[in-house]
Image (cartoon, rainbow, N blue to C red):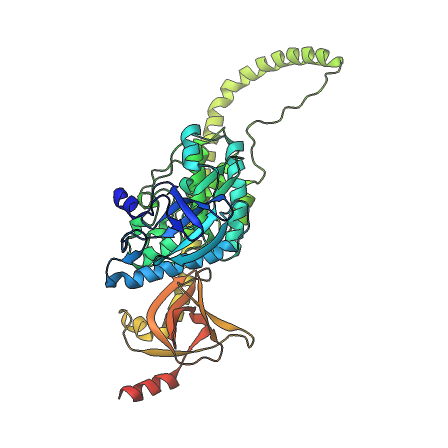
Amino acid sequence: MEEQQHRNALPSGFELQEYQIEAVLGRPGGFGVTYLATDTHLCQSVAIKEYLPIDFAVREGRSTVYVRSASYDDSFQWGLNCFIEEARVLAKFNHPNIVRVLRFFEANGTAYMVMEYQQGQSLTDYLKKMRVLTENELLQIVQPLLEGLKEIHNAGFLHRDIKPNNIYIRDDNNPVLLDFGSARYAVGQKSRSVTSIVTPGYAPLEQYDNEISDQGPWTDIYALGAVMYCAINGEAPPAATRRVMKDPMQPAVKIGEGKYKKSLLQAVDWALQLSEEDRPQTVDQWQEKMFSAGSSLKAPTAEFSQPRWWSFFIVVSIVALILLSSMVGVLWYEKQTHNSEIQKEQATRQIAEKHLEIERRHRKHAEEQLRELRALMEEIKRFEPQSIETFSFFDENKKYYEVTNVPISDVLNVREFPGHLNKLVKEIPRTAKCLKYLGGLRNIKSQVWVKIQYQEIQGWVNSTFLIRSKECEAQQNVEEN
């Protein structure tokens, strides 16, 4: 496979518009190839990323990329559009810790993303030399990346592929995030197996399911937490799929005890929770925990001068202590049995209180799940009442809806996948009627998202803004009869 990928790469010396290809950077992946090139106009080095998914495309001849067969046309075009959209989004960022996209263009039947070339080494190579990092070394890398990640998330975008190989340490020790995985993830959802688009150890559990798009900042937080765990432990945590039944991962608070601040280790373990709801939901929330006041590595020592009477006081204290110890020795034996019984009683009471607290938490969690289930059932009834009555899957009858509850000056957003953080596809006017329900339904954080079609627009909308359209259904029934 690697030999095939290198054969698909553009040859050294190839002229791509004003750029001359010098070499392939790293090992080509299954999604594309990244080249070291020279901008012949500005006489400076750049990195160029080429969209070349080898699962359904191949280079024939010296330059042109072709789809392997007509059956792959849709998948190839889907990935190409996502690749171009990713370049457009990245070009808007001008942050010192996010890779800078200079331009993108289409040529040779595919597309190219031109980026600043970074002098330095990947965090993977850096960790091979260092094995593990000290707290200061780790924070010098993590803190700038957190600021860059906040800017990415605030723009409604996700990295989706944070790992040591995609973190570059410049020669001035300043880190930069490379190789965003959003377009690669979109292609994987369309056609490829999930194992080919995730990195075990760094990908959270939600990225292993192509049918679930409940991803957000917590997805990138898990990946960066895994990078920190690797820098502390010397190796990545086990794959999320291995941790489901019986988690073999040792917590960071145990591995780094005495070497790192406790709040930092607790923040790493928080980020690596399997359930996305148990992780920090934003980078700000995570930072607050990570840099909160906690136990330091060494407690500060107080320095003071001793007054002259201090020595006399010490001597008197020692004499008094000897007298007291003899008295205590007599009483200790008599009270030993009594104290032992008291300790047993206290331990029994603490265990009972702990079990009672666990029972209360379980009951509270069950009540919350029941409330969410009831809300979901009510929402499903609006779209599939028969599925509640008969407990069967959704039928294939066509149903139509109208837009409702949208303010006068607003529109209804249509997303590429369920969830507010996913890419905006189109906007539907608040007066739109006859939205066709296509059968998809996802519960995302107690909100039901449905897949609809309006004219030429297809995508996912929040069902809160839909109401059943009996007029359109009646019209459809007349047309069918």
